[in-house]
Image (cartoon, rainbow, N blue to C red; front, side, top):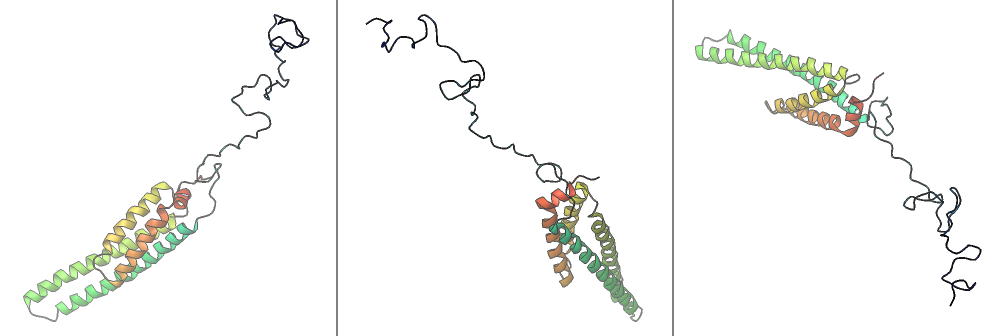
Length: 205
């Protein structure tokens, strides 16, 4: 069989001279294999839509770098709890001051030296607890005010103060102590959540 025969399946296509390789279509024309000329076959063709690019998380924790402008509900709840604990510390401090004054007054009405010494120690302990409660009252109030404008450093401070408040609430284990324990744990949870982190790490004008 001759390679020059027109019906030869192994010969060049009709209209193409022998001895020449296959014609490469000009750039921009469609090739015979379904891919545009000049485009690698490993990439999708024009008929395959590409997936949209993934927007990175920007400052504030929102896609696309959005700025957090409204305080999340969990952070608002934590702020309210800080005010409640501050008020309870104020009430507890006043109660302990009154108790210390009562013990000190009762000391003047006894002649027993041992009882007097015991009352002196009790008065000192009660007054010390009262001072601590009042200091904690001011600290919690300042933190509650700073929640609106504070940054990540305030978030860490809130978590640390929450842990310390929970530990202090265990002794003396009273009704007010139980309330402080529950509220401080809730403050830690709300501040440590992702929306809390987004609020404290937000961009500021």
